Image (cartoon, helix red, strand yellow):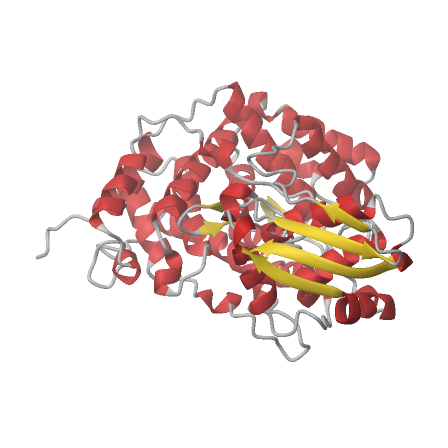
Length: 481
């Protein structure tokens, strides 16, 4: 019998069970921000095709006393709600981001934790503490694990983090939390193939990218419920011969540092360290949009643009130009918002970037194609290559028809840790995205419910506000008794 312990499994289970959920005012504010940002992004994308497909699927899991589907008010199992409510969160690359040795979106876990808290009758402080705990685990894992070494995608990390948080919400024992983690990790490793940039039969990126994170969270909820019922997972899911860490070739120094980060005595503060986005484009495009809009504000008429030169962080250039199939001829929303040339062109031509910017008819319009194919060049710049820590910088130089050069300077974009959102910025993002869907009055009520969550004895009122009545969302179906 192999009695060698799985140290990481033990540390994660102990952290899940024993970390203090006491949140000081700054952490409460950061959790509220994560919730507001999550709701702004997800509710604003309820009509996305992936979200529609997810709701259609979830109706197989309808139950009268389940968790609420956002936008319709239908009740389904907590597992189905975790999947469905998380899909629109990833519709437009608009939610939060943290990058260490790996990078990903910690807020993917929020819809699943809300669903589980509602279903099990948890109060507001318990939900907020679980979110803070989940972020703590996610950031620690992002800081120390290089997922690309094993060809793995970021949902593997958010799934582990969510399992720790969900186990705490369910009041699982340390042993049960360990089994839930084992069930999470080994059967559900998410491949990086979803980020291959291969195009589907419509010439678009895979729709599964919109499901990838929330499917991982669904698996976390499922794993915790199985462990609660007595199911057991692999014995050494992290440090076993074929465990997760064997695939990542984690150094002993990084391993030891990660174990140190999972000390239950540490205060929960990592939720304060994530980056947010003002525009519905991946983080590597945010600085470029800021620079382009800065230049556009000084251009009286975009028809006067003679040429455009974009200088970008080398990592930005690699991710949004060289890796793309044809960034100069986007054919869909997703090939457009993953193209640095198109992102800059749209900001310069329209003077704004929002969820309607990259509609297929707009990005294939002749005025866009003229800028992309006749006027715009993109160059990688070593001088701007500070990566995520600097804000994925880009500079935009526009030459007008009279020879004047208008420059949008490189700088960290709004929402970056170097230029953080204010409370008002999160509230405005909620307003801009949710009012068209839920109306002004409901949007204000959602804001008030989130702000009051730290003292709420139930999350049910918030979930009720997130339910039925969203504009443009298909009607709810009758619940199964």
